[in-house]
Length: 140
Image (cartoon, helix red, strand yellow):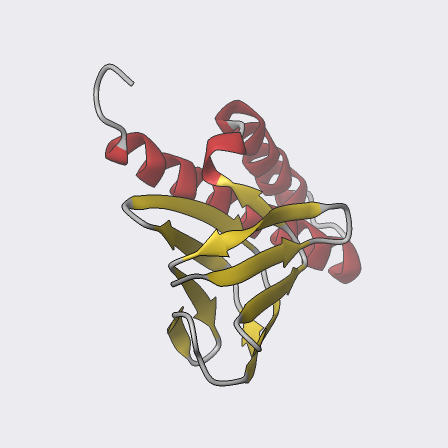
């Protein structure tokens, strides 16, 4: 038994497929969604979203958005989301360092808020990429 999952950002559809289960970080804690789940609308917070399909598992870094569950379909409208395997560690590290440097230069409050968002996103990507690296089986 499966449930349709779609993760959509302003730029593109990040994921669209039938899954066994999805674990979503929300402002009320992590929610596990299985087929036949009751209707639900929730705020998604930055964190690790886990997708299970049979024996396989995928991880997506997500920075926030909204979750809608209805009629065996899960729709997540995300501010930003990236699959763990698509995270470019060098770029994330560079973005983190750049944001930290610019924040030290005493920018305006508005610029500082933007930089904090970029810093949180880079740190999240590095965390998810690090977890994925430790889960990989040698030789794959």
